[in-house]
Length: 308
Image (cartoon, rainbow, N blue to C red; front, side, top):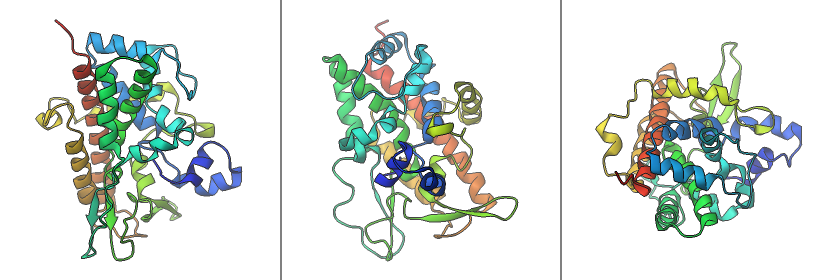
């Protein structure tokens, strides 16, 4: 998710159409709605019976603030609930820092600032909202916490949600690639300047596109996109379960290292990503989305384990 108010204004239609056309390429959110829906779809099919019953029950509860209209079908409702945290972010400003963690990643001898990462971050938020779900109690709070957990598990697996590049030019960091621009070239030689963060939010251009007014892509586009993401990334990899289902800090550290190895690797500001970069980055993005889905299922199954 982007962190700047101007991009939120674009998403919710506060600015005019001309501004949206100019800035839309940089106004991506998380893995975009499509990426979050793929994470949720991969997780939902792996929930145990008790977890699925509880998830379906909580998501049937109306909460404030309301997001977009959620479908009646439980599986689709779970998918759409995955981007509720983005849909209502302008009305929940207190959750803004909970979508990411700025783990410093020096690119030169410049020392990282002492105030990073911020105390409110995605690792802390996941711990907080999971605690609410495990405690049970107030259904309205649990319904809200569930939506946030589903979203933040997706966010923490996006490499640039867990790293900020420290440099002489940006001693406070580049805000997870939000201040790091690259130039994307198409087959005609046309170049488009975008934020590195937004480029990765979009799965390096491989995720289904949003509809008019930043609506999620059509539901029927998610299953084939999920199949493509999961291909070659089976849930049997032992690294997925390493550390257990509550290993939030470890997931963030994984993302930070992938930011170093893939997102920023051999790339300078204003560069055009090479074919090798795009191939590796696409594979990494798909693997992280797949692992987010598997880990989300394991997390929810651990919160609501089957008794049998």
